[in-house]
Image 1 (cartoon, one colour):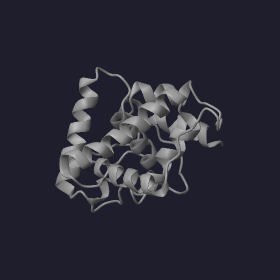
Image 2 (spheres, one colour):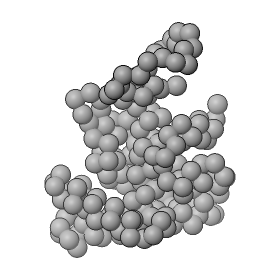
Image 3 (cartoon, helix red, strand yellow):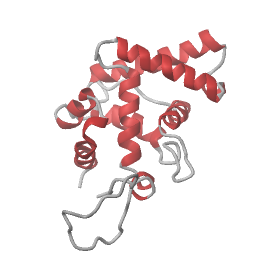
Length: 186
């Protein structure tokens, strides 16, 4: 199965957890990588920043590792470059650069130097801006969606954050679901 097909299936299973913009990109707007149109490249530092950003969204818990351990920091730029149309790549890259500039202006620090409290404060501001933008695509919404998609399509997300049977038994369409039980990985 190709990576894009697998991502579409995971996104479909996640339903309402992902915004309409990301669902549209995954189901309709896949682009073919064209170096002349896709001009945004992400450095290793950018991937590290995105890993930290994603860890705020899906942090490590006592039950499972977080988004950073699942490799989401490298997943996000890969999907942005390979799957998103140039307009949304630009929205993402501009929003990413705005977030980095906001760190310097507000905290007089680089993103990776922020403490947890400052990162959460910044995240809340970005989230509020996304809400105020009246459903227009934004860096925060795209990064949040790709964090969720990347995490729950990773080995860690499928085997540690969800119930997992490496060798499934018979199909039981009326299997009992207990309150608080993890969702099943397929």
